Length: 112
Length: 115
Image (cartoon, rainbow over all chains, first blue to last red; front, side, top):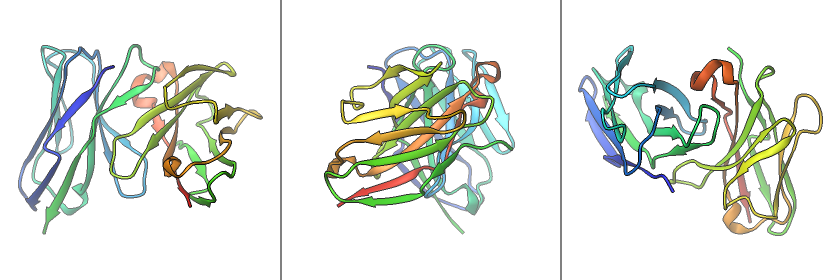
């Protein structure tokens, strides 16, 4: 089945640093999603990407949909302590409301 | 902001017991889902529900699992005879085709511990 591979698995950064994480797949996704999960909470959608090559920002977050449709990256600029959490990439297997496939996540720790 | 509500937030049960996890999806959403996240692992799809029937299920969703929409608001996941390996966070989600994937909303989850 479709699988999403995320790297790195975990990151420790200083507050104020920029962060970059990425997600790759062996198969094409038509939509890429980036979620954040805080401890004890459900995933919350950060950014959705719908077109190959699309670059989208949401505040300090920027994500891009790779032109091959097999990869995406998420950047966080000027990290702050509340950025701590697990970041997942995900994509719907087929159409908009079909089940989502998730990557294993990147755990981000921010040192003040 | 509309939200998906799940109860209880934490349930401890003995192996072999039945559990029912409850969810109240966002009121105008049409698609409902259950996902599972074993501690430290990725979120995995279990089942989707549309128009009062299962539309898709994963290989994890075997005969010990069932879902139901007993009334107009609740959506439940029943595990008939729990096993130790069923211990996980269970997330309910709902979506509306008109909102695209920005409307795909997860609840805060139920942590199930089987002892």
